[in-house]
Length: 297
Image (cartoon, rainbow, N blue to C red):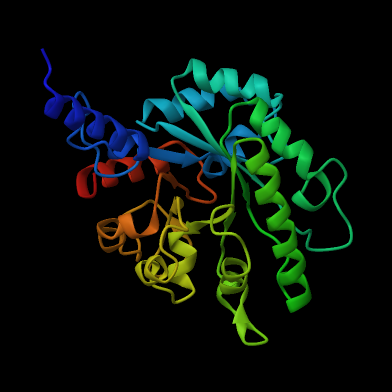
């Protein structure tokens, strides 16, 4: 018979397990310790393939699953937000392959007054995007980019993000903003990156830190973790060629991934997506997976 002391100890262990990300249940009964989040992929990496005429979405997603990817993040292209499918249909394909659809990328404040016919963005289509993502079981809506060339645009972008955070929360989802280099450029004494994080609810607006673009902007990702602890539950694990500065397979460029991963707990990371803009074949992300397994995981 279990005594009171054992009962309380086991109850505390179970409670702790419920508060941790699933991948972080190290040392708990019946759980295999995982040091870092499962490897994911931003499907934009294979954008030219999955959006090409006649492409079979399931075939390409199976190739992704076969290289060891566990989680997916999507992005719009010529095939639409869900690659010629509805959100619910796309989610069914993903689930059948044993993958998890975690995040959905969409634009924020359009960069011009003209919006391409058929395209959607958070300014004009917020509720539709949130509802569709929720219907597919996707947990995150993520702004892929937003116009931030002036302080007025930064403020308008921030207002959109506040609304997006609220809308996502009502659907039991979360919202994040993905950075490029321009977010770190000061405008009227403050960068868009700092403005957004300083003027939004830390429990509703998060950042998806693109490790490569932050590095290219002269930022140390670990210093950002320390400045805004817990605000980076999503990462883009991207590398940049040391000579050309263009995206390359992880481990072959200039990003110091070992330093970043060693300090990952500061960031609050729960999902990490490999991304390599412009990849032509599955071999590029496969190379990134292999390097991460050999050197990080």
